[in-house]
Image (tube, rainbow, N blue to C red):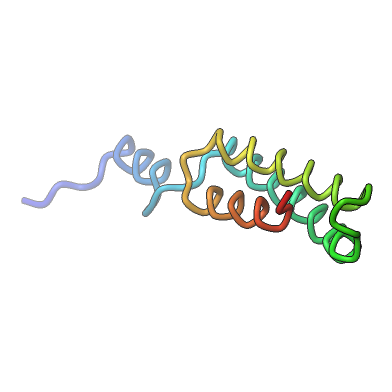
Length: 94
């Protein structure tokens, strides 16, 4: 005799879904990482034109965004976030 699915098992199936979802706090962290990446991209062209030892507000903004991005990445245990941090640090290249 085949048993029908109980309502509680259907709820469990609906809640868990077919795979693991990204937790909401991780979603917010990745959105913050994207904001920092946009700041880095916005300032990178001007920062590349700066003299190495001269003051450069664009380079400063780029490096501050890289530091902030890495701070967010450290709160996650995620290889993608770590890779984005490494790329941001290379773009800063202090």
